[in-house]
Length: 197
Image: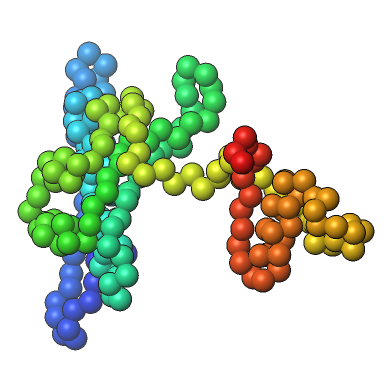
């Protein structure tokens, strides 16, 4: 599909053949042909290469798509969704995290780099054993759920039952202000009660 969609001028010859190569060996003792599995080292290196390639390609695509020059920095966090073999629970270990600026990334000739060395040069956090799901700390967290925020209460609709705003406690007053801002079309978040004055 990729090769068929590749655009060339009319009349340009476009013929191709594709083959999937696997290695087999003859097992004399069993008189059978068996598929030769990749060795563990090759699989680990291939996995690391894929992680590095996906991260660099994604960053490249984002900067290339930014025709209006609105993006200065890209952070890529690469994780997998899997099951923790020790607990049986769903986990999302972060295997790679990298942050780079458009200026820095534009100096890189991607078709000539060693992907792993390129990421190291960019200051990336890369798992030493991604195949074993060894996690790294993300450079930037993208968890948008902030536990400090609480649900707003509708105080505005009850104002007519309160003769005096001075009767509101501090939490109710914050809710009132949040409600008023929301009615004005602004987005507000209210934090949990603390011991501040």
